[in-house]
Amino acid sequence: MDNNKKIRGIIPPMVTPLLGHEKLDRDGTVRLVDHIIGGGVSSLFILGTTGEAQSLSSRVKREFVEMVCSSVGGRVPVLVGVSDTSIRESLDLSAFAKANGAAGVVATSPYYFPMSQVELVEYYTALADESPLPVYLYNMPTHVKALLEVPTVLKLAEHPNIAGLKDSSADMRYFRILCHHLRGRDDFALYVGPEELTGECVLIGADGGINGGANIFPEIYVSMFEAADKGDTEKVRELQKKIMTVSCSLYTVGKYASSNLKGIKCALSLLGICEDYIEWPYRKFLPSERVLIRKALLDMGCKDLR
Image (tube, rainbow, N blue to C red):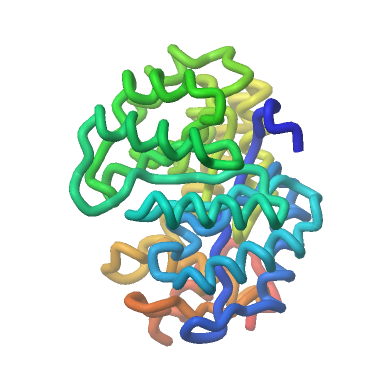
């Protein structure tokens, strides 16, 4: 991959298929990689929030990086989440990712003490200075207790080894301001996390979406990006209904903060792509909840469910 050329399109935050505690689902990983790439995505992002990175040991993370990069085989760029409370751990995983052929790394701010904006600039600068791969900022204020404020992003965007931002704040005003300031930059990409906002964000200048539902239905999200990128608002409205059906049907079962992760993994299991084991401290859906996901998939026209 040309590291000076930004990635545009849909970049699924891939789940980490597991068979049990600390045990990767190798066959499921291969099937999932092929399923996602077959849907026309532009890249893969592993070890993010949807990938349960916060729950995985360093050994499993490294095994998964190696497994995914091997399965992808250069068909699309692979981005690796390296978020950690230790910059040394992040840099070590970055080096491992590069050695296995990854194209970039993605990092939230460290998530223990909330960080000031000055500290955020210092931290990301230090990370980018030493990272062997381009660094993508990950704005996730609900999970890490720190917002990457607009002036902070603009300052960091001047670093030659900081390549873009994934915004999961769901704050459209914030995203619009970033688009206004960064529009036209060929060396800095803006991606939106919440899939319910992808069409709108691409219409105003986003470079793509890092959308969990693309694990299940990559074609829908790729079509949304393409329609929005062309300014085809009629098609965007049509696809928005499908994306909202996915969101409202699969991510709302049970009263869990992790319902979207549970829903995605349960759906993939029912589709026969990979198992739905979730690493501690979280658990997969109960049988009664699985029934609801099955019904939702059937209502969406899916067949041959397990």
